[in-house]
Amino acid sequence: MNIIDSLKWRYATKKFDTKKHVSDDKLAILKEAFTLTATSYGLQPVKLVVVSNKEFQKELVPYSFNQEQVAQASHVLIICIENTVDEAYIRAHFENEKSIRGISDEIIDSFRSFLIADFSSKKETEIKEWATKQAYITLGNLLTVCALEKIDSCPMEGFVPEKYDELLNLKNMGLSSVLVLPIGYRAEEDMFSKFKKVRKSIETNVITI
Amino acid sequence: MNIIDSLKWRYATKKFDTKKHVSDDKLAILKEAFTLTATSYGLQPVKLVVVSNKEFQKELVPYSFNQEQVAQASHVLIICIENTVDEAYIRAHFENEKSIRGISDEIIDSFRSFLIADFSSKKETEIKEWATKQAYITLGNLLTVCALEKIDSCPMEGFVPEKYDELLNLKNMGLSSVLVLPIGYRAEEDMFSKFKKVRKSIETNVITI
Image 1 (tube, one colour):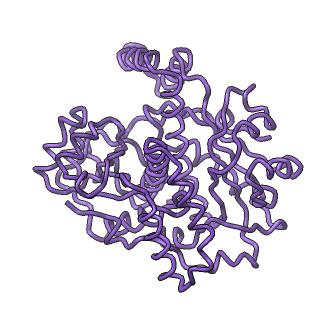
Image 2: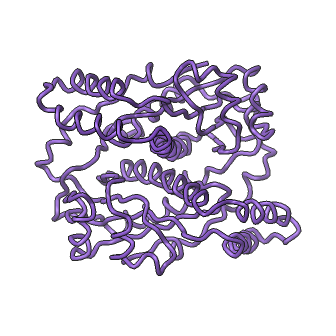
């Protein structure tokens, strides 16, 4: 199946088959794909939380506007942002770069100094907004990778982040939840899987200058 | 090449080969993939502007923090948001759904009314923020599709949107530029293509609960 067919195959799954589970191998692909996502300056201000405990999943439903997919799904992926992107965070990033690429401080120094100064001049809300945008890039990537791997998913902005953060103890990990993505396999009776996809025409949607 | 190898292959291209061009067939895949991207409520508050006029591309460089890739690239994709998502916009979306799915007003009425009320209660800045997030989903999708199709790209947040909007006459189309993605093929001498990818370890980046 080519990429276009895969993207046509995917849809926001309304009902998952509770008996089917995403294998560890497939899950490993999603975890690595998430980690490989491009982010601004390569700073990766995002983390992925994976929940497959059914009790936890049930508890999350009322804080997900009662979307039952959160309970039915094989796994619930929660895309989170880092609450703190400060000098220490940026320094740690460059230490990682140095160790992976075997390069010296000299090479990275001016860019590191620029980023430290840049982020220290930003308001907390600006950093949050910036990090949130990066979370959406990871969602775009994960949705496509799921489609390629024939994993069904349902992207959700509609949930109560504060409640997720509390129930999953995310604050103690320095994280805030931003997006929720239940994954698994569509239930055969999910009529939404049979509906035609609604999109603007490519001619309307793409402008060539 | 599997999806993980494709994602490892991609990088933020620093120098494009000005002699190599993305074919019409490949471009058609990107246009369709963009259009197929999932967006909030399916409202698609995003459009893709494709520029391949070299004079235009050169003009955009000073408004892209002098990133020469904008001039070198085969095509520059500009992800834009709709400036107006109002009742008329929402009604047009549902007319499109009705015509594609052959369904009646009765079926869509309550959801349509909800969305019209919901968006009319939002401030302009809130709608802009919401639409911008959707633009980032399309970027995540496009980066992955480019990688699968062996097209190089360089995602850019660093540009002057007002200048892009002015030069490309986007305001008259009801659009604002949000993200820039030059695409093409890496120049052989781009040393960045040889660097090891810098990422946190999957163990650090993914938390299983």
